[in-house]
Image 1 (cartoon, one colour):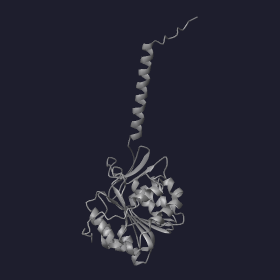
Image 2 (cartoon, helix red, strand yellow):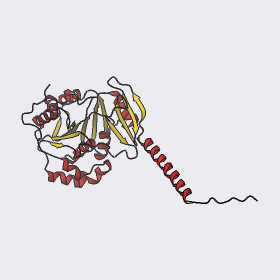
Image 3 (cartoon, one colour):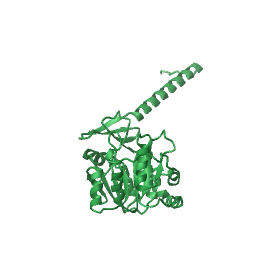
Image 4 (cartoon, one colour):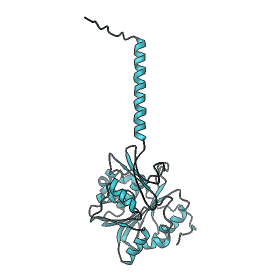
Length: 305
């Protein structure tokens, strides 16, 4: 009968075995990291403006323009937790429900991947949400890859945001909340940054209505943008992230009428804490960003048509 001799586990053997295990573990780790951070192109949608690109990386699905190499991401969704907002600026914008919890209708200019319309539909279950998007290719991608669906409470208009606002004013339409999140490949389109445009926006806000606008802290127009909002709306909340390394976005929250007191906002935060948590919004912490400070020169020139 064949006898199998046991392998002698000498110290040199154990060292060699440990080295092999360590090397194998390192190889697995490198593979996992490479797999985790690999960027995969999912889809490219032709557009008359710029190709709309859908990609996946690090467990997220994102929308971009032109190519996947562009560092800017216009929408990202955590595939394992779609409700949780990936970007700080969308959390800041959505926190505006603390200013007007009883919002019944919302206008969102700039659909993107529909992060805001989808979240607002869950936060405000009785509200009607109108979205305006100039690029039909963006709308197609939002529906096909990001879960956006049109319906009686989610209405979509394919046209220029300013044209829609001016027509809404002419027809006497009013909104409790208006969100401005329209960007082209460079920045906010110039005709959506002027005093004349904001006067139209102000006119279609209902009494006590809220304007929420996404902007950049690093914009060369920062001072003039701020002066323009102030010229139309007066004081506003200027939300800037505590860690500028995370995002360069800032969010403006203005009201048609006096801004609510911090005590009123803290009460809203206590009441809506559980509602906002699934979206990654820590209501009480968010209020620390609600600054009324005017951090631009008093003589900054207003932007006009």
